[in-house]
Amino acid sequence: MTEFIHEPVLLEEVLSALQPATGRLYVDGTVGGGGHAEAILEASGPDGRLVAFDCDDRAVAAAAQRLAKFGERLELHRSSFAEMAKRLTKSSCDGVLLDLGVSSPQLDEAERGFSFQAEGPLDMRMDRRQPVNAAQLVNELEAGELARIFWELGGERRSRRIARAIVEQRDMQRLETTTQLADIVERACPRRGARTHPATGVFQALRMAVNDELGQVQAGLDAAWSVLKPGGCLAVITFHSGEDRLVKQFSRCLARPYTVRGGVDVPELREPREPLARELSRKAVKPGAAEQERNPRSRSAQLRALEKM
Ligand SMILES: C[S@@+](CC[C@H](N)C(=O)[O-])C[C@H]1O[C@@H](n2cnc3c(N)ncnc32)[C@H](O)[C@@H]1O
Image (cartoon, rainbow, N blue to C red; front, side, top):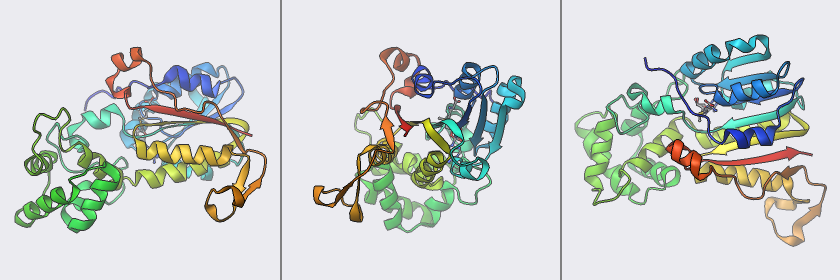
């Protein structure tokens, strides 16, 4: 098994948003290799505490090893961040971090099946206790449903063509590996000089569907908000537009000085109220040139942070 190395993205920016301090309680909903967690625990010494979650067994094992030096200041759970409200008291936390998506080790380990660049099983589960994997979706969903997933979650314009090609192939032989799938997509949609592999959107979409990532983000935002105390900060790092849209919408709704009757935001239906949150910056914060150069995987990262009022 390879070493678990993941470089935390936007680290300075996350610390500047959370302002970790001694005696306080923080949550890392996506502990991964423990990079952000370690920095939060160091900055909140000598007795700040961190409750950390990850649904990936390997991430939890790696984080436990890296963070063992903090002893009882750390509480680690192998669980979804959507469950945090079950483990923490309402309005008890000073800061919550969600660093969404996959970690570098998940992408780099062929046997996890996240990448089309290496031969591996079509798995893509972050939590390997869950029953549904990518092979099941690819082999069992109807063509129309596959096309919808590729279009809605992967932004794939040739979604129907790809779904048809998959169904034709699986009728002859069950699809088991990442490279089988990548080859089918490439044959259906030849690369013709494009820089990105034609299967990029399909792999992203399948990963998001297998792990119900958008559902998890929404549930995680709600859970994080309920455990935060007034004055506490929620910091969320996203890696694609679907996730960022949810976070932006969540944050805008809380930060506006009114509610809307019926859910449609038109001036006639607005009812004034005090804002429930303050956005730390109106625009999402992106990695600077130096970080992007040092860590190319940080390029699509965006941080939004908001303070609970
Ligand atoms: C980008 S990595 C986090 C890296 C981490 N901040 C670090 O410094 O090493 C994202 C992590 O979130 C985890 N994850 C994704 N969805 C999750 C969920 N719904 N609940 C808990 N963990 C999740 C993944 O397993 C992965 O380890």
